[in-house]
Length: 254
Image 1 (spheres, rainbow, N blue to C red):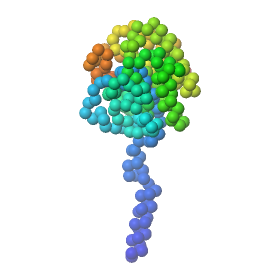
Image 2: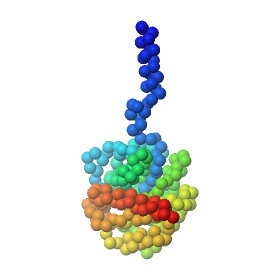
Image 3: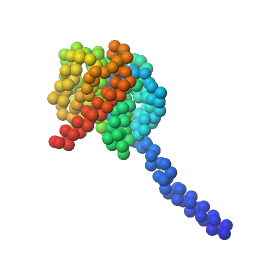
């Protein structure tokens, strides 16, 4: 009887070892995301909106590339590992609601975010060979086998009246695609708040390059002269996701 009881216990242990999925591991996020997004730009991409209670909790299904080049559960502030570094402490930006919106459309995948924004920067500092571009490339190249799903770019007021902004933006997209060896890499550019001249140039990007789209920033609410409040950041992130979906639809139609 003792032998039979022992066999039963051993059999149960074998089942436990052979079937870990049955005990919750199926819901654990993958340690390697299926879709990876690079989020770059200025202070509203970094996030300046004050964090709300619960924002420091992990975002389900989303991973964040940390300062050691490893994936960890994503928590706000998402720009804290930027190697820019940022000129102020990052808080709540559009990456949170963007990732949630992408997951809502495709709940079976794990999302990876590489957030490397720098408040107060100009687009010239993001040109190939300049420090912010090269630092972002440094982070990307440190991830083995990385292939980006898309780049999200949010500018600021530093280039608000720059007549050459569109040309600089087109060059940035082309350089990223070439250096990452992804000629069709989707690129989503966000608008700055308000009716600034640079928005007119940003809206022309899809007419210059395929695989690009614009995330509108109509009527955002700010908590200071330049920075979107939390609700507007949530809306902006959702608009980035909608713009990404439009790029995918156009690609399917070709």
